Image 1 (cartoon, rainbow, N blue to C red):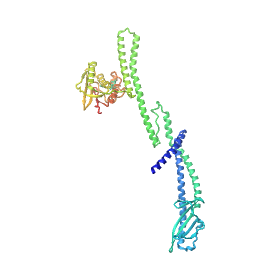
Image 2: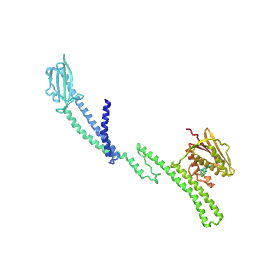
Image 3: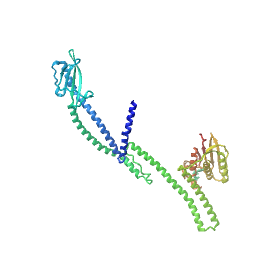
Image 4: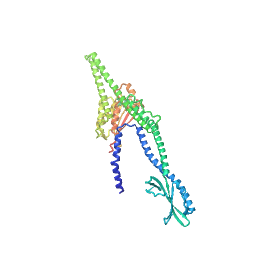
Amino acid sequence: MKEKGLNLLRNILRKTILPLRKKREEWLSNFRFSMAFRISLAYLRLMLTHGVLFFAGFFVIFMFNAKADYDLLAEDMMDMLSAGNLTAIENPYHDQGVTMKVEGSHTHQVIYDDAAYRQSTSKDFIFGIHYERENRIFIYEDTRKLTVGDGEYLVTFQYDMADSYIRFLSLAWKLLLLYLIIVALIIRKGKRSDTKLFEPVRIMSAQANRLTVNNLNSERINVEGTKNELKDLANVINAMLDRIETSYESQKQFVSDASHELRTPIAVIQGYVNMLDRWGSSNQEVLQESIEAIKNEAKSMQDLVEKLLFLSRHDKKTLKLVKKRFNMRPLVEDMVKETRLVAPNRVIKNPVMEDVIVYGDKQALKQAIRIFIDNAVKYTKDGDEITILCQKINEDCVITVSDTGIGMTKKDIDNIFNRFYRSEHVRNQNIGGHGLGLSLAKLIILAHTGRIKIRSQFKKGSSFIITLPKRRF
Ligand code: ADP
């Protein structure tokens, strides 16, 4: 039953108040009110609704206060009645609005009754206060027991609270006026402090408006002076701007490094083409040298562009790996054979070659391992040793590429995976390369949840240990 009633109420609300509220929101959305205004409006509404509560409470307190005054008179009368002669009763407070009726407790025979005694017509209003509709006045009725000698009586007092009510009304009007003045003052003041409160938001949006890629590094939202949620918001936005700036700077650096790397082979090709142009193609020696150089530079450029493409696909997340299960051993063995062919002057050793099944993209992994082996060849000289191992350790595949070449300093080890990084001694020795190989190899190994460990000693040699974990699912 109760459930039914609640459901009915819910349905009525859903069909009446909610659509109305929606309509009001829709209508309000046509206007662009500031947040400060809407907050002020909400507080104003709260103040007005609570104002009604305040006046209702004030009315009750006022009337009870007035009733307490009458109670003192009634008490006085009771004392007089119990002390005096009941046949000669007089009500000295009649003129003050107190009426009295005395009747026998059992017989209900009226002994005394003020002429002005009223019968209240409406129900009990609140704690004995009645509202008499006819005369539109409030009456308080109180019945007390009186014992005089052997007789028991009922004494009914009625207080005419019209005077109190009139006093209440006149006070209430004044209070209402005062209340409205205070509300007006609060609105005025509140508007000012709301504007102050939202000042950081205004500054934030102005600053965000000024933000461009050119001032990304200098423009930050000022959080001085604010110590609230807006400060947290500003800090979050500033941290986001820092991240965007770092990413933007690294993109810029990448483009600049890539253009720089491409400039060298283009300049070399241009140089040889100019030379051919000037000396003609009849000079066999010049012709041969030019063809060789142009071929090398074109190859280097192709290599660079392919690496750049690979990295950009990775950054754009369009790189697709086709993973399958395969044995790593034959793959590494093939690479060892190829290396022996292309670098006959290095001592290539492969003392341990174990069968180990790997789940991954065969071509991509081959590309990554080739980078380590090519580097080992590149950064060693004739007669140096290169050791390549393929091992199965704790079910994982571990590939080691070690060399007795030029080695690396601590600074190099910390930076070799950064794009375009090349150690200083490598640059000075004019060894070809773009500093992209290891960053690319790292991407591939990480995409296979693998890891790379480096051991190196400057001028003594380096070891790269690549671990590809066994697929555990
Ligand atoms: P590149 O070889 O084209 O310069 P990489 O990214 O492959 O680019 O290598 C980055 C740098 O790491 C190299 O320039 C070199 O300084 C250093 N490096 C890589 N492999 C070795 C190695 N086996 N021995 C010594 N230094 C190496």
